Image (cartoon, rainbow, N blue to C red):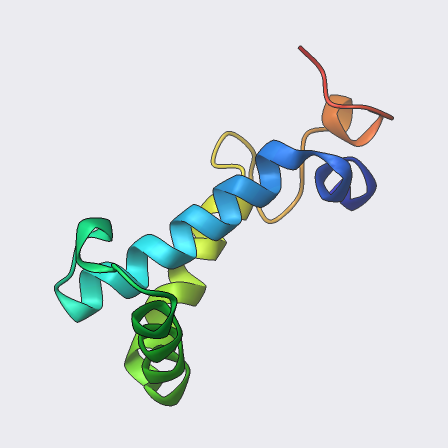
Length: 88
C-alpha cells in the first residue's frame, strides 16, 4: 500500500476516526447527540478500550476504511502505488 500518500491525506484520517467512532457508538447503542459532555465521550472511549468485542468492531471498521476492495489481496493498484500525492 502507498502509506506515504495515505498518511498525508486528511480525508484518510477523517475516514479512520469516523469509522472507529461510529463502531463504538453503535456498540453502545448511542448516537452522537447522546454525547453532551467531554466526560461522556471519555467514558465511552474508556469503556470501548476495555471491551474486546468493541475493539474487534473498531478494528473491523478501520480495516474496511483502509482496504481497497477494487484490488486483489492487501495492496493498492500499481497506479496507486506510484502516486506521490492523492489523485483527483
